[in-house]
Every structure is written in C-alpha cells, then in structure tokens.
Image (tube, rainbow, N blue to C red; front, side, top):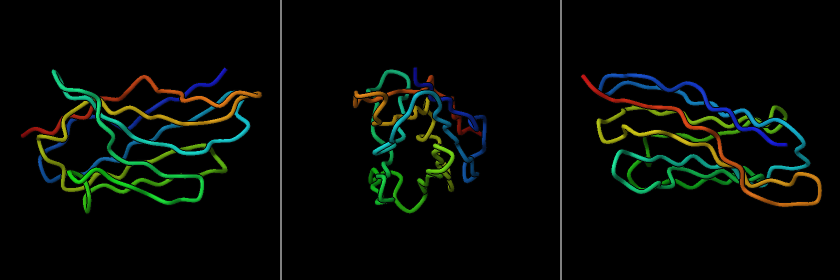
Length: 119
C-alpha cells in the first residue's frame, strides 16, 4: 500500500506565502516524478508543477517565478513553496507521485489540502 499525505494549506492574504508538503509512505520501491495539481471550485484539475527524479522541474505559466517545487528523495517528501499568492491561486492542492510499488508502476494521489488566498 502507498499513501501520500499533504499538509501546509490554509488561509493567507494576497501577497503572502505558504509551503505545502507531501509525504509518501508505504511499499515504495522508487519514485520517478512528483507533481502538484490544483482544482478550484467549478474548474478542472490542473497541473501546477512537476519535478523528476533527476530534479528537473516544470511549471504552469500562471505560477512561474512565484512557486518553487522541490523534493527530499531520502524522505520521499515533496514541497511547494508558494510566494506572492493571488486570490486566483485559491484551490485544493493535490500531490501526485508516479512510482513503483512491488512490480507495478502507477500514479498515486494524496487527499488534497485547501489553500485560500483572501483578504
């Protein structure tokens, strides 16, 4: 079994910062890539940022220059540093990991953490 648990969400004023974490645990042989997605009310889930096992990163245009994705491979933990937050960043943020467990490769999801940007 594999579990991804996000933390760090909350309410923040526009221009503020938050740091999200996602801890992966269970029968994990290897984690290939990890990503953050978000879903705002009434909208589709969208990819925010991705980091590969080689630490290459990619970002949605809407967050470039404001968000930074990183990972601690020794701890199987993913982070998202979010700066200069805007009201349009309000969403549930989900962690995703493409990994190997046993002899299977698959994508696993966390339960999500709410981020609300409002004055």
